[in-house]
Amino acid sequence: MAQPHHFSEPVQLIAFVLQQGGDWNPLFLEALRSTWGPIRHLGKLYPFDKTDYYQPEMGSDLFRAVLSFERTISPEKIGEEKRISNDLEKRLSTQEIRGRDINIDIGYMDLDKVVLPSFKRGPFKLYNGDGLWLDMLLTYAKGKFYPTAWAFDDFVRNPYEHDLLLIREKFKKNAGPMAPGFVKSE
Image 1 (cartoon, helix red, strand yellow):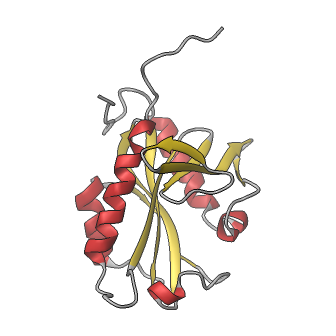
Image 2 (spheres, rainbow, N blue to C red):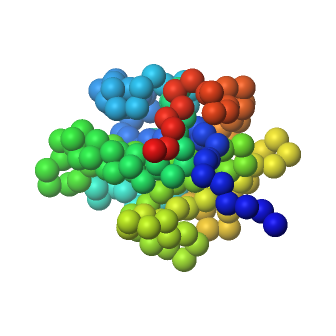
């Protein structure tokens, strides 16, 4: 029988960022760095053109990419990171009427999966307490990331695959409790 333990392995802090335009906004990159520290991997921006869900709030010509930070965290800290990302979105918004200028889906990657926290419930999300649900969107097996049955269309098409594999490889190389930037759970 497995016994409970009071530690967790570090996970790679990542973010899927949605913004206008196909070139990284330098203001957004600086804000991300000043919030979470140095960026370990900066992914390529891909057109976010299979849905217009964010257009009323963010406008058209939207692109999304994934990036990782040098920092790793304990997975139970992801709720704090989600609150920080929501606050950062508000601070970076210049759109008083329309909505946001940036959408930051902060999350984490371990060697087996990609998990994004949400303050919205959903049929496949697991409640984590304090108003937070966890959504496992991608699983990793045999050298590839696989979308879950409920993943959004861009995760199903997964143009981020190459970047995710590079992020995973860098994380694997540096993973462990002694990983640089690991923030231990209190």
